[in-house]
Length: 448
Image (cartoon, rainbow, N blue to C red):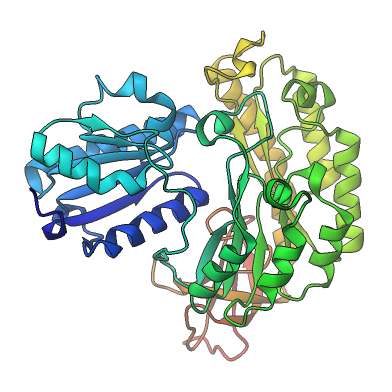
């Protein structure tokens, strides 16, 4: 038998922050077997690529990453290449025979079969798949990746929302909430965390399957009592489940950052109906108005899809007018990705990639003016900034405010005599470029 403990392992995660949490648990699982995990791909005998398959661009990134890793067989120590996660879970039948760069395929819940698969692959010298044969599920132990002062807490998996463009339910299955007691224990195990980011495909439906009612607010209250958690950020709140109770909790709970991510996806009623989104333009505007009225200073983030089948020029103009009326602080936009095995794939009125990109540029331009004005309004003001480390150019410190979620929104760059990662600082904002802020702490004295 091959001595798997003598091998060095490396894990690459691609896609969303939920995949990041899964990968951190995979790393911990490998370490629990007495194996070494390295960040240097050239040192690893076994590389696990935890893939994303949400849209075509994500699949291409996953495939290209595997191909790049495979090249290390000649220039590094690579012996076995494992492709895991969403890509093999949904597309194994298309991949196994042709994607010969991979030695092993594992799905989203098969990580507990990793060492069984490796042993068989080494001993029998053949490629194999154990997709759908594992029971990894929820597990407490994880190895938090850098930066350690920010941690993600994945509170559920899967999705019951049947948006017509989305593959997630077919990849991840039905919505499954993780037990509250386990989540509290996991959060306690993370050590000192400056910012805990709550994630799932839809965090607002947390607990419906376990407790028979939405239980996000009770979970947030429990998490807020933990001494090792300084602040909590909420991502991926579906608009139809943002209750009065949740709004009140955001407004009154001092540990919850006044920030909320609400994926709206479009503004026009006809398109929303085709997407199987239960809300309307009017209800979206009412929700945004209520949030701002009841949570003064709240920063809202959203995502939108352009180029959905049958979307007209009037629909695009309607989306732009919605953005101008809603004045959402941070937005992300995506061109519609046509996915087989989704209802939207069968709709008429699909458009070219070129046309979708043209529309994408138009809505981005409209939002740039809105976000730019919001960021510019902070020039001359002092804001609290969480230091994330030194900027890439080494010229200043980099961090983020409550209205800037890590990795997806802008950053705040600031000068200071000294700043420590994971600590909060008062920073006077001196300039903005529309997406980032620039400033200095009050005790900073510029060099002549």
